Amino acid sequence: MEHRKVKPIFASFPNYLKSLGMVETKASPLLMRRRVCKAVLTRACVAALLCLLVLHGLSCQQPPEPELNANEFKGRVVGVADGDTISVLRDGKAVRIRLWGIDTPEKKQAYGTRAKQFTSDACFQKVVLIRIRDIDRYQRLVAEVVLPDGRQLNRELIRAGLAWWYEHYARNEEEFKSLQAQAQAQKLGLWKDKNPVAPWDFRRLPKKTDAAPNKVEPPPPSPLDGTTTVYVTKTGTRYHRKDCKTLKGGSTAVSLKEAKSRGLSPCQRCKP
Image 1: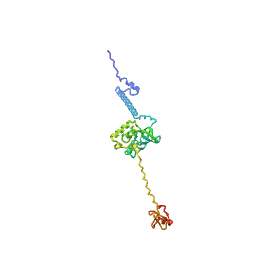
Image 2 (image 1 turned 90 degrees about the vertical axis):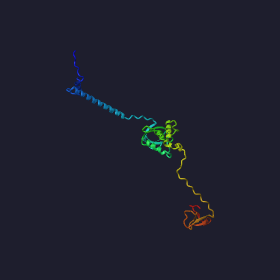
Image 3 (image 1 turned 90 degrees about the horizontal axis):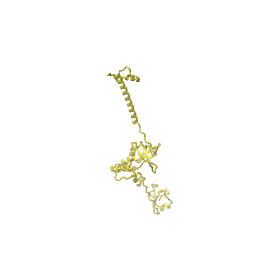
Image 4 (image 1 turned 30 degrees about the horizontal axis):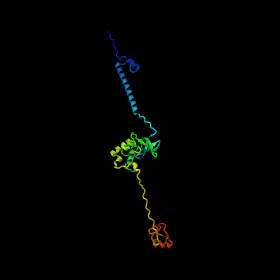
């Protein structure tokens, strides 16, 4: 039986590679195989590198921000009045924002200054998300304030024991109720006091006036009768009381009857 020689699989490569312009025709099959492997590996590495660059670029892209509804806007905090009142830029103007569902201590209460400092540290000069819930009687926007890291400032103040849950306006906010209970149990912030006074009760207390007390006017001088002693001067035309500031040295004590008989009139300053 006649056996035919089988040509090696790479025996026909020279003509193929020559048509691609990759190798010379006189190269040995072993050299051609090495060049082929090197070319394939190079192209594979380049393709892998391109894929990595594309994937890296996609991972670095910021996800699109969700669209805001009519009751939401973002702005930079430019002022902090107290723990629960801030000013935020909206369309180039600063608008007052009252934090919804909470009430921080007043400035003259314990922890009022600390609550203001907490709010300032958390949001001042930062861009926050405002979710409007209402408008109060002072025309302030009552809203939730979402910090850049996603936390809600309203909740964080309660969590730190620096705000009360304003149950009257957020009656169904169970999370606020739970956070306040936790702060009370841990005696955080204002809950360290034995009998903390709620801000809405503090505002109802009578205000102390800082004005100086009214001066008590001296009683009017008693009426003079004819025997009352008055004081006159040699050249004067009026009679005076003993303590009159217009009197100078040389006054003489006479009776009121005698002073009137001389035609003297009463002093307009001491009014004897």
